[in-house]
Length: 307
Image 1 (cartoon, rainbow, N blue to C red):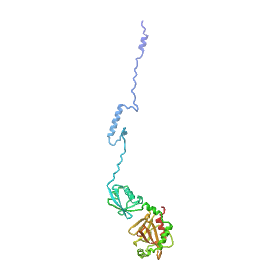
Image 2: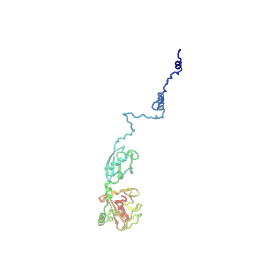
Image 3: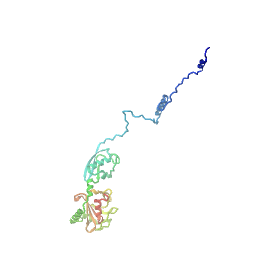
Image 4: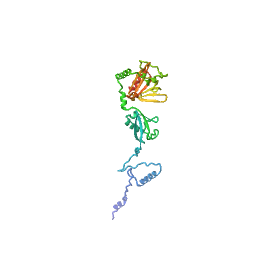
């Protein structure tokens, strides 16, 4: 008799099940080919649309460098020659025509000893201002052969002006001047004084000393007998001597000393001499200055307040 229990048990077993591993899910580091292809297609399409910026830029590879475009420095242009007149001397200056005005003033400073900060450069009656603009461009339009007038003081002149004569030296000079022939009796001065006291002269007082007024001094005559206004410009270190038609600007540093003496018969007024050099011909004469302001004028020029 055949035992069927084992057979039945065998037949009762369920068939074996084959388990299949699921496909791996894409991670952030793994991009399916289809997605990668789609992304490349989208990027290519975006870059072909005008005005579209690709979000990522290519990084430089080894051996390559990135640089910022820098404008090349303009080479010097053709040289032009200009003339600078200073203290009755002519200085020939050569400078590229595309140089800035500041460079021209720097070269002038090297030639004359007047630093750019102390320069007043005149061209065709106008002051040439500091600028980085080319000298051959507006507003200067400097051309070859141009002539400038330089107003200013060399550093050594400024230093000399700061070392004014001592009171003893001033007294000696005034005593020597008093012992000599009075200036007002000399022909070149007498012809100016003979014009008489100007009608707009301020009252003069002898043996009295006052500070300079805040307004220009009027009623003074220059060496040509013209009425002038005197103004001490302390901020620019200049004495302005203005007539009805023009103004002369004398830098304090160019005035070595100031002397004065009373006008005989009008002791309330002085004849003032500004010594611009050692020779008598270099003295600038002023007539009918009220005597009470004479010392203040001298001290302001030789010892500017705040300097």
